[in-house]
Image (cartoon, rainbow, N blue to C red):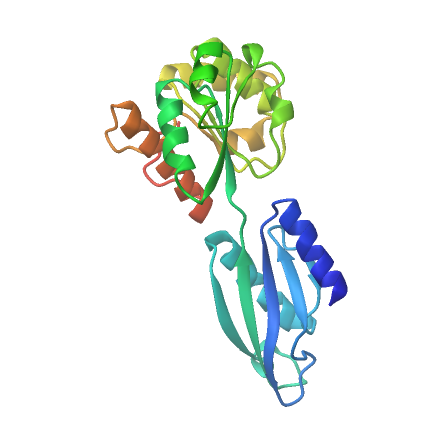
Length: 259
């Protein structure tokens, strides 16, 4: 139990999502004992045990679904139905533990400001902004976490696994520069980039010329946002945040404008 508690603290400190599975009741002969716990990570890796075998395989499947959806619930498993000769019933409580997601915005102009304002007003996101225009940074730093980054140099060093990133700088050149610089980062959950379809095609073609970008292109949403007929900075910010939430909760982006 002590090791499990240490692992829980480590995961929380590192903002890693996981499922905590606890045995709350058993009947008849079962390898699981009340109080046993197992941690399931998003990649399916586990720490601890709740009985092993086919039981754990089924629990892992349920845990991964719960982690993705941020849900918790009680499951009852009949071991004979899982092909386990020991028989018996086991009740497992699976709790999804998800940390606030980090939303990183490269370019806090009119749309970026609205996106930061809306997302910062929820408990779902921790927001971080970067801009190469000092006046934009000065306006926002009193209320938001915004940092000046000259020409967006080194922005790739500021990102980490699990981040949701939106790129909307003040020019195609900077957008393309940021996209290229972050394209090798592993583990980003979402990358969105504003722009017309023609601009996006050019950017993706340039990106593919650098090689080894297939996985990155899969998470690149550009043009960014959902098709909701958005025109104002507020509406566009809503369409972007809606797409992020959709990807966050389902892994897909319904009505996306991406190419």
